[in-house]
Length: 209
Image (tube, rainbow, N blue to C red; front, side, top):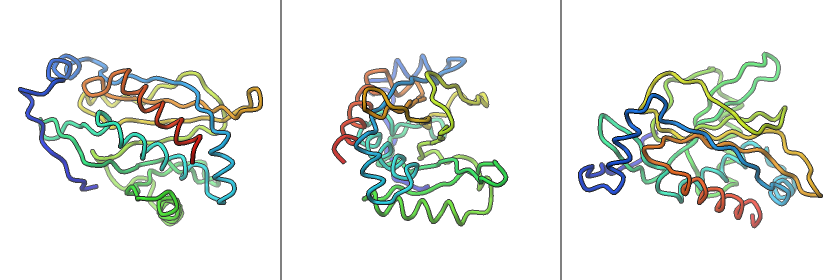
């Protein structure tokens, strides 16, 4: 969406070796699924009369932007680091049961984002407005079911590095609302420790918002 970025000096970059290895992998993206406690967050969302989807997209984007590794991308053969990342999410037409892909720039507050995302999604007529931008996180909800694993369509592009986030139907467990959440990333940029950092940041945000 036009966010600023810096080109990485590949020869002195600490992940050079890792990037070279995973850049040539047949399937360089991998996915991790885990549960989030959304008890407090859902209560906060309901009190503000926000759509859960829009509020949760903001929460994930805010936290992912705070982990540098989630902002790396390939661009014209180079490795770049974006200053910030925006959002691209699926939005279902309940009448046709077809989804559209909606692109919304990140905002500095959850209130602003929820308002803009809701308005954009409701007013967009096209199912697809073009190829997925490089500087976005992709989101898709599966509110009809819970899950323990998820996979994604593979178009064969080994340099597709936009993280993909999915979440499912929350369920009650010992008085808490638990929700399945999945993170797909490119291994050239993101290791398990970085997904762990995101998981910690996101759970803290959901608890304290």
